[in-house]
Amino acid sequence: MKGETKLVIIIVVILLLAIFFASGGSTRTKIKQKGSDTMLELAQIWAEEYVKVNDNVTLSVSGGGSGTGIAQMINGQIDIADASRPIKKHEIAIAQSQGIFPVEFRICLDGIAIITSKNIDVSEISFDQLQGIYNGTIKNWNELGGSNLKITVYGRQSNSGTYVFFQEHVLNDDDYRTDMQPLNGNSQIVDAVAGDNDGIGYVGVAYAENRASELNILKVKEGENAQPILPTIENVATEDYPISRYLYIYTNSNPIGELARYVRWILDEDGGQKVAENLGFIPLPQYIIEEELEKIS
Image (cartoon, rainbow, N blue to C red):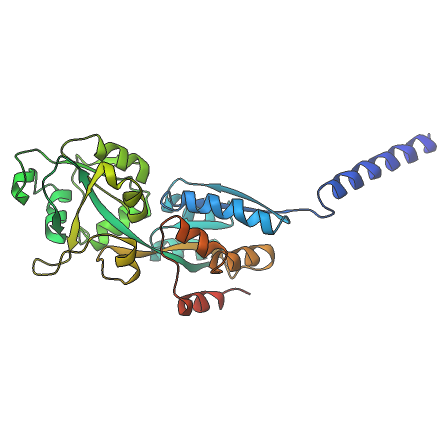
């Protein structure tokens, strides 16, 4: 009986060693990343590229919105929350009450383009006009000098960081109109607006540029007497375009170990920053990269 037990132990050890060496001789660190739909494609490609240079990790990436990502980071369900808006004070308070201490990293710049169908004969728009359209006080394109068409409004769902940023930065915290059609992400809004003769929506600049032939992309001016600026990658990089923002990731405390290595790679100009640039986002200037690197243990 003792001999049989010893044989079983030997077989188990051999199987464990086989699994160990088949995986490269080490156990992989699992990193879970979730949040902003604006950042979903970016995060997915980060994951694909990073495992090519570091096979000690496996990366799980999903969307669901900035609010969802931050909530799951607070609950300890994920390692990185992707967010297209800064974390809120009440979210920080909830996190700290649960022993979670969010650390913010700026990871690239993005702009929000205002798009309409090609049928709309309006070429520029002001913040006041955008506020009127999205709060429901402006209902027809003829109020903006266009044709006599009812305006159909598309936006993001309320758990989206873009929804929050646009409401705070452009609508001046005004409420969205009740008939706005909320959609999950940039691609859905582009599809909806391109197929709607009287539609308007807001999407990331990179998404607008990639589908420019199907859309009317409006110049935007912050004030009535300001110069209208086209939402291009160049104008976001120079901060001339008025609807621009940072994109963020959040971790619980200063990252260490494999998580720290991954965040460093995201901030590396030849790593994650190059991926962001290739997707139409704006890489961080070097001085901001240096500030963010100081947060890594």
